[in-house]
Length: 101
Image (cartoon, rainbow, N blue to C red; front, side, top):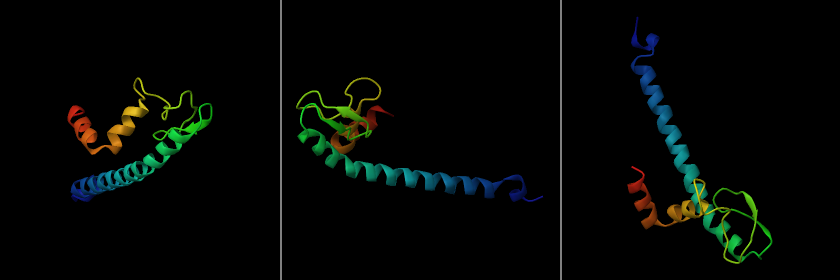
């Protein structure tokens, strides 16, 4: 029997190609989201207090409670504020990658 009948090298190569494609699509999605974040951030910053806006990171709608609020959360595990600044700032993104190793 050949290797391909047992899922040998051909199966491994196909799995590697699939993983590469998935990483490429993930990267494209991240880049698209990263490009959209600053515009959403500006919209949230200029909105009036009490209005409902969308979070620039997770798109969750929230009611703006103070003039400087632009994110739905800035504490805990789902911290959109830190996620935003770690995404749009190259210096912070580099530092975040170092600490997440």
